[in-house]
Image (cartoon, rainbow, N blue to C red):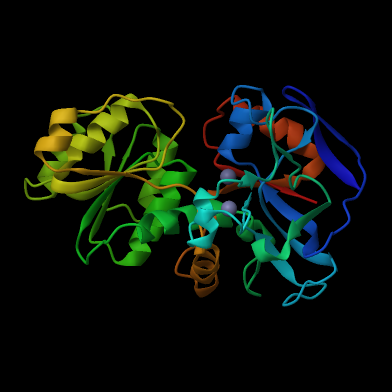
Length: 342
Ligand SMILES: [Zn+2]
Ligand SMILES: [Zn+2]
């Protein structure tokens, strides 16, 4: 089969590799669409240490079932599917308690470190355990389905807190994750959803996604949020940028007893306003990955309550992957998601 193989740091070859065959309980998927994740861009040049060559990258993908391994039930050849991007074990304490996102032995597809290696979806075929697969509803195209992981993560964030009708939430950052948060928060019936961003293109995207107000991150963010919330502050702040300034602003944007949800996690350590956290009884929680939110995310797409098409900047052939990785790496303005088709 053809694959986009990472042969050395920042270099891909579109080349022939052996086609993987499905083992017991596995499904061989003919990959149709795979989207480039921010973590892939931070990884292919070697910075994150999680995409070491030789490796097939890619964990956000959709395709058609090509072959069923022995013992697979509930699926048929030809059916369109997506899969959970993390192969959890179903064996550890966390998996046994429905917390598959915290699995002790979980491994994301398309990752290679010193201790783990799991080829990913930037290839014609990938085999994954059937328990990771979800049927794609008929009306959801492969390109959209390839964005199901970030949408499912946004659903996971919202499922982790109790948002009441008319609550105000502030989303810091309007990149892909921030936009997914806006889409899902609007779908929940959250009262006001405010967006904090500096980039003009992303601000415009936030506006198109129904943000009730867009605040420039370089201005006095907390003062503006207070003005928009009757002086109180917001119930929720969702931080997706993982920057010192946005984390500081997130803490200063919520009311006493409010909640700061940490989604961005690029920086290994950050500074927090400790006295504000304690004295105002702010809840600071991390949300990571997904467990059973893929079905909900697919239903949101199928029902039309959420659309992710506006996040797709280009859908291009898999063999052009190198060019698009490089353009994303150069942080070219106006680029969100790139979907590679095969
Ligand atoms: Zn991802
Ligand atoms: Zn596990």
